[in-house]
Image (tube, rainbow, N blue to C red):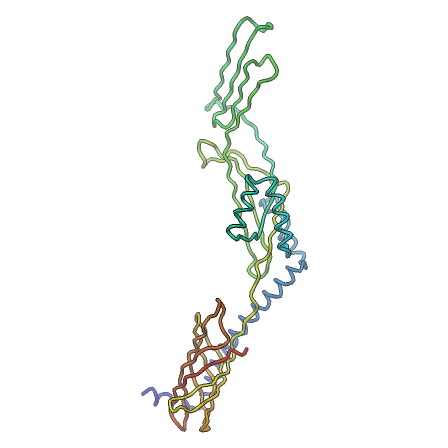
Length: 322
């Protein structure tokens, strides 16, 4: 039944139009994919080489409104590593041990950021939540031997002040018990190599972390990163192949990949064997990987239909030529 349907289809007057339409649709889709990939590669190369448009420069500049930090794309990974090492030795706890940890685990630095915030606060006692104060007066009234000790604790318990004698300078103690939230986001361009980063420093109530007490203002920012390498555009559309049919006759073919899923390709084209006989075919190509990369060779199995010899079952090897 399938053979009869295929015969009638091949005899139909509109077969060339239907075939041409199908090929055009798949070809147009593949062209769009390749064009998109090439545009991305072109934009990526331009940005990595430091040529940015005015809009792109604005995109990576510091913006206090959003706490958006200034970002810099660094093409030299060694330079980025050296700069990050300087900051690490200055700010990070146990920096030498951390560098050894990075080395032992074979980690690669991709980006770092160093930002400066200012946090201005004013602590006030509220009527409904008064501060805890304690005043102790001993021995006389404001004479040389008078002792006035004083303690103060704010309602959130983040700030405490004590002095053994407020009439004598020195020995005052300020104690801080603060909780902070550091939240940041990094956004990557879909069609380029640029990144946009934000970082927000917020002080929280130490007794209730859901309450925000104050927000810091971004003063100075620095976010540097090395762009991830991208793979070259791979076309993988046209194939050339050699094989045999069920009669063990050799054939050569040229095909076009209509669709791919993982390591499998749906391929259509034309074949010619040693009869000689030429006919269209449809096949499935399995393309194995080697060292995590696909080979240029694949194993194909399919069938073709000839008006002279009816069905031909094909087994062969295909070369991904373009």
